[in-house]
Length: 619
Image 1 (tube, rainbow, N blue to C red):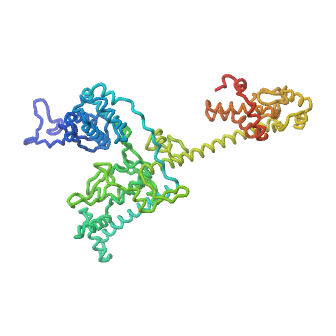
Image 2 (image 1 turned 30 degrees about the horizontal axis):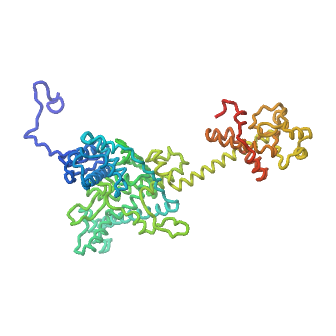
Image 3 (image 1 turned 135 degrees about the vertical axis):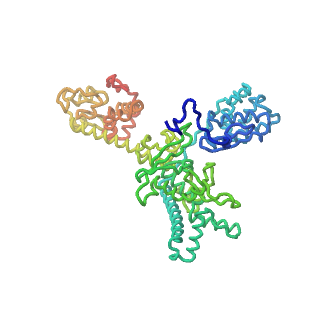
């Protein structure tokens, strides 16, 4: 036993107590309902406050506050700051709408179905369906629903017409994407070179000032002081001149808001992630054998407890880091290192931002408190660099419109094409249905590529079927007997038949399912009685085809095409492909368009195919 610490107490001996009076630390104000104020701490670790006391119609204030507290709580389903704000805006519009009515319902008990329908069909709202659906979720709270009449609640519960789903945002063409990525990398390299030049000048001003010019020594001294304080000098200049000067000085060591568009867009492109994920990139990571980085990223809208995902990003070889997500992530950390220390941020993106009055800290994590952050003006960045979209035929080129969604779509499209369209492998940050529905289905690049792939696949399958038909035909006689033009004894004899066989063929005695057979008792391959199916007749040297057989052949083609609806492509090509290819490529091409058109008028529905196949073989 020890005289202190664990195991020092026993029966009859009291535990050691701290000396003096216990003074507990002040507890942080907990989220929830505080009178008419709702304090929210969302799953994305952000805070928001909603004051229901400012709402008109006092009779609604307490019920709405209670419902809002439940909706933004653990069981309510509002997991993010943005979703809580959206619901609150709907509540404000709802209460203001009711208060503007000639006879407003002063409390939930006086609400009628006609009020709900009027809100739904008001002229000034284009998002009424979504708002009513959100109010239905909000008013399902146990504190609110019992206050509503059955008719009013039923009005919220009506099935609303679904909005027509919009196609996914189309990505960039190959040329647009190449130009955009080149511009993003060029801008990122310039930012890296600028900050490293400032770091180098500051270091040389300390270690070897005699090697610098007077101007460089002065600038190096200013940078050294700025590295400690984080604040550029404040010269006595007019505001219009002082702000550009301070921004230029800060840019020697820190990122500014103007640097965010290329860095964040390139990060989104390389990581195949949306803008929200890039905004919330964490500092915490680990490097795996100098080849990759491992970190936990945020992917919203996946449902409760499924927001966080551990990813591994390749760093890339030296000199090619800006082509790999891991290399770009480490560069982002390097460029923001000083700002992150000064603002003590756990997030990768931190910048210098001049504050009005100069008293607040000038280094901020712009997306720590609010994902909306500063306006990046992505399209303005593209216009300043003369990035042009591919012009429509006969029109002048316009500036390229930039967005995180479009560049993510473009990268997902390229990845899907590179993996041969295999969605399980292509789905990286989304599920397969979401990847197809929201990113691939509406993109013209992937649509054209898919059509090209399908065309090539069908061509390959048809060529394989033709080759199989020709190989079998070479073994079983070498060529089909095809008689074009009017059918007569002389035409059949000219095709190689003897007079007796020609006479029987003219009488129809040699006809089989869709063709004729010149010697059923002696198969060209075995020399014995033929035992193959009628579909194999198209690969046999004894097969006789005349103009009179054309209607039945066209009927067979229709039947084979109908079978495609009930069989997989592989099964259909294996079972019917050679016969289909023989008819299309080796038989019909021998007849004139007029002969084929006349046969089209004579054909009927095919029933022979059902008879010649074994019942257990039928699909």
